[in-house]
Image 1: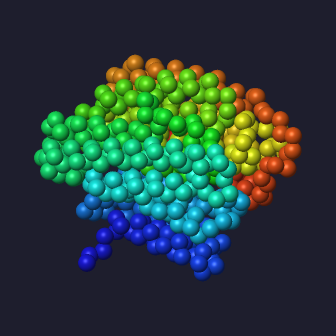
Image 2 (image 1 turned 60 degrees about the vertical axis):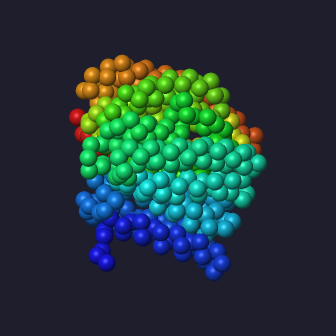
Image 3 (image 1 turned 90 degrees about the vertical axis):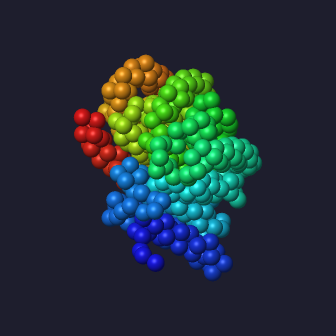
Length: 442
């Protein structure tokens, strides 16, 4: 059997996941976050080296390589970070195994060129979250969060399977780019592609498919939201990029979903009054910004890939900061956080400003690139709506910065000296991206 380099990242992470699942029985669970992190870095390195190797069903093109390397490094950062969190002390090996399984699914999602592989990647990515969102040691709210996520993920998976069946009924092919025409070349194929779009819209919480997103964000343990927003959603965005690039007829429905997401997400986030719920609702708006790029043709594909990467970075930094707070925090106790974890507080402040699109943050340049793509495609109305929605978002993002909560007992904040090092590295990465991204926009 010939060696296929496109499978190497999956083999590295998959082997590490199997070892992690066995580690608890062998008493080696405490070492697994470090093994998992190193294997994720190795997977990212293999993508970087062999990114243009064409396989039978996986293709690491420029977009897939960019997102695949990001997903691998984000998973490594998250694993190193939660190694010091109390939730990782129970069944550490199983926890790492679930997270690495999630990474395998995510890497398949961004690179698959076959509908069945996309479905397998989707399942490998969403199934671990059922356990992670209700991990032992979490509160009762986490159980509710896991239950609601399970219902939505099950609905999305069923919709995705129906879409695959309709596409196969239409042309008898499961290829994302079939030999004859595209997937939407006939009525069954078009219905199937629309079903895939709806299924993936559920996964990124785009309106009107955004049910319970705020409840999930509020109840889930903050450390695992690092992976939900910073890894899981970015992988779904990668699958949407593949789908949109192969099916130009989707531009109009994508634009409609984008517009509704921008409006609904910003209005609900403004009315949230709770830091986690606000971030959940604002994720709807960010899904709209991402979809606004996908609706802008070939240039929009590039803008969407960059926006997905930037959105992932902002989510990782935000939920790293929130992981130090008590799980029932309604707002951010800035005074206590700055006193106990000053660098982590700085990272959290930077990422919130970047999510708002404050110039000259990386969030600003990512949104600017989407606007340029929409203007280039003559979708002026969508570019204007994006600019207005982004400006409106300052009302609730800045409110999270200037209306701090008072924490009666600062000792309730988690303190880990190592987290300051992670936060410092995160700030350096954000500043480095801030230096590079303007060149991509120009």
